[in-house]
Length: 114
Image 1 (cartoon, rainbow, N blue to C red):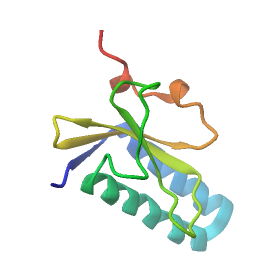
Image 2: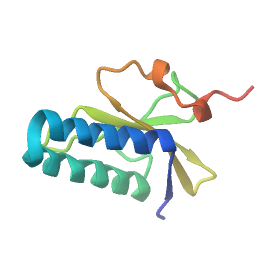
Image 3: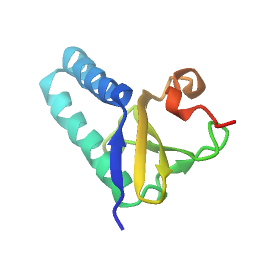
Image 4: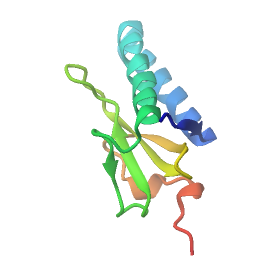
């Protein structure tokens, strides 16, 4: 069963900023290597959002998960923060750098319900 990906506006901005930074700092060759890592990670999440390398992150939110975009032999310093909704949707909240404190960058939609 494939899940439908819903990407928040904030996550879209994150992706755009990461790719723009990659182009500025590392050039077109690295940009062309990084872009498919992001695309492939989203495809993997849609295929099975709970399969490895996805990690359940209950310390962030009871239904929060993270998925690092690195692949074997292809280092990347970013991960997606997301949650599965209604067993058919995946809400992508952010694309964050490894060095970022996740709790400080949570989207409003990830506030734990009362």
